[in-house]
Image 1 (cartoon, rainbow, N blue to C red):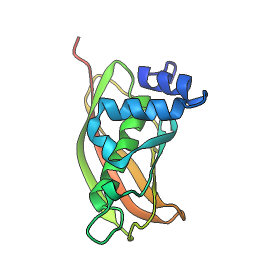
Image 2: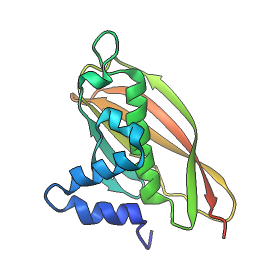
Image 3: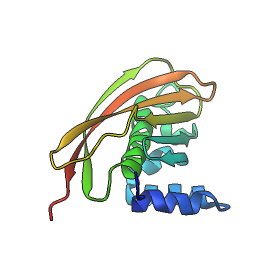
Image 4: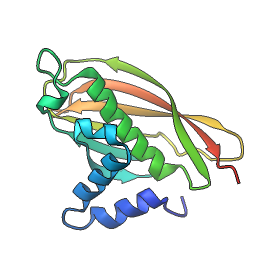
Length: 158
């Protein structure tokens, strides 16, 4: 990609300074307030890839004290959104269209979501679906949730 999106440019600027990642993560949560429920911390962000962590705290607990399945989906959506923000050019817009989720293990620790595209698609005049795979890992590296979030990408209207 020849030019950075505004969100990716802000990440690039802030991620290299002390407290910058925390400030960027807070700004993401202010733009999309529901993300605050998982206290996301963006660790890596580039076109086609994003890594986001989330602590295990009482606000994400389910009835048995583990990381709630829907909170893990919320974390996956943060990672997907940051991939979309870093990847989709400013000439286009994106919207989540659907989400497929497999809960593969009990989530008993803090979480780490990794959203990664195999390749960056060409974005043209026609709308297209882009599948964004996201794996959510526990602190031991075990995958506890696998998700594919499909976004609909279209050229912005002039």
